Amino acid sequence: MESDTIHLEGYGESLKSRKLYCIGSPKHLPTLVRSRVAVLDGEVAHRGRKCLIMLENSANSTWLLTMKWDAVFIIHDTADLRLAITYLMHAPKPTRVVWSGTEPSQNVFQHLSNIEGITIIGLGSSAPLLADWEAIFWTHDCQYDMIEPVLQRRMGLQALSKYNLKSVLKEIHTSEVGLVWSSIGETDKRGSLYWFDLSEKCHRMTYTLKEAAEILHSIADTFGAADN
Image 1: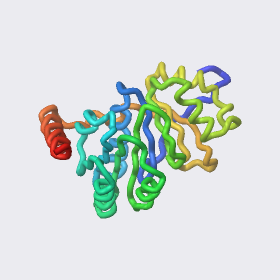
Image 2 (image 1 turned 120 degrees about the vertical axis):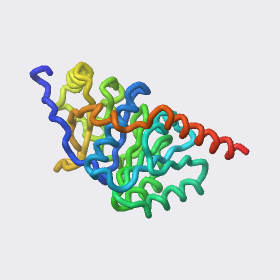
Image 3 (image 1 turned 135 degrees about the vertical axis):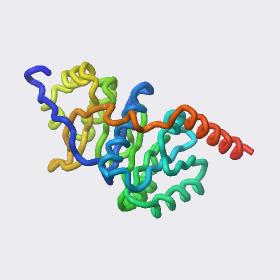
């Protein structure tokens, strides 16, 4: 990086029981989400449960359903959502939840946050609307215009100005590592920037092709039954 750029440290904070958001292109978002779930699995020694909550408008259903879950909830209406929340309240902890689709409402998000021993991972191709996410991860191919407005809102112009963000992102792109803003463990809740390994442990997160095909057939049957 250039001499007037702060050299970022590698990210090392625990993700357990936190609220995380992953942003990336369709090509690299699966790797990012799998790696964050894998890191969490390692932190909790694979104890507890992993749950996927997927809204009908989710654009990421195909690859998410190839990951290994203890429970999958496809949300058609509020009854489905109540069922998912009831499961999370009583599931063995620690629980890792991936939420796919439109962000939860502030009320639902707060309800989930109040469940002890739960980690929430949201995902999308653009910045989250909720201000309560404690860390935001970007894939290495995210562009300046996707990142700078988010950081300015969360850190403020003065705190962000100490980074030469364009130079930082150039190095991130070249090195193919991810960028993360995090307020976890920070004395200043405006947070700081770090790099992280985008592909950490993610190769152990997927089903075989045969297993994935069986799951997709099952999901298709579920949607068909709902339409009827």
